[in-house]
Image (tube, rainbow, N blue to C red; front, side):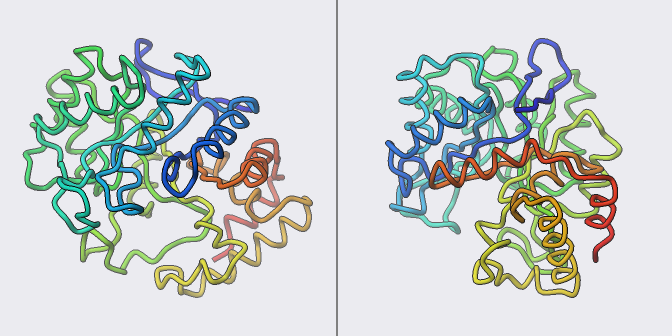
Length: 328
C-alpha cells in the first residue's frame, strides 16, 4: 500500500492510504458478514481510509440512513480498531423524516443540525472524535458563515479533526474557506466529488441544480485544486459502478459525447500493454494524475476489492500516461 497526507495542521492531519474504501451499502444491500470480510481484507492490505455518511443508505429501505455507520461501529469494536484507521463521514444530506426520498427535506447545515448530526454519527461509529467530517450537500437556506462556524466549533470542542466538503459549487467552497481563514478558523481541506477518467459533459442539469451537476469534477474544480495543492480530492464512483466493463452501466447522457469512445480506446490499449484490467488502469491513472486524487471504491465481494487494491502497485509509463491524457 502507498500513503499520502491529508490536511496541513500537525494536530489534525492524517496519513491515509491512496485508495479509500466506501461503506455506503454496508448494513443494507451488503450484509454485515460481507461488510466485515471486506473491511478485514482492506485493512490486511494496508488500507487505512474508510468512507461513510449519516444518510447511508436511506433509499434502500426508506429509512433516514445510519445503517452504514452502525455496521462500521460494530466492526471497529469487534476488531479493536483505533486511531490507526481514518473514518470519514458526512452530514447535511440526511432526510428529515423516514421514507422521504431524494427530493425530501434534509437535515441541512444549520448550527443546530451540524452539532446534532455529528453527535449521532459519533455514537453510531463509537468514536469520541470524528477523523474527517464533510458537509455532504449544499444548504442554500443557511448562511454560509453559520455553517463555517458550526464546523469550526466541532474542531474546537475536540469532536472532529479534519473538515471536508462534498457536492458544492467551487465558488462556494472558496467563499467558505475564505470566511474561515479571515476568522482564524479551520476550514475545508478535503474535497469529495465524483471523478473518473472519462469526462462528463458539464451542460447537463444535475440532481441538485439546473446549471449542471454540482457533484462532478470539472475544469473549474481541477483548476482550483491545481492552485491549492494543500487540498485533497477524494473521488467517489471512480469506476462508474461497473460502467467501464459493462456498457449498460454507462448509459448516461453526460457521457454521450465524442470523447468517451476515444478515452475508452486509450484505456483498453494501455490495459492490454500492462496486463492489467481497465478498472485498474483507471485507478492507477487517478492516483498519480496531474491533479492526484484518492479513489473511493466500493465492492460487493473480496474479489472485487482485490482488483482495486492491485491498482495501487500498477506503474504506468510516461508514454502511457501521455496517451491517456491526450485522448479526447
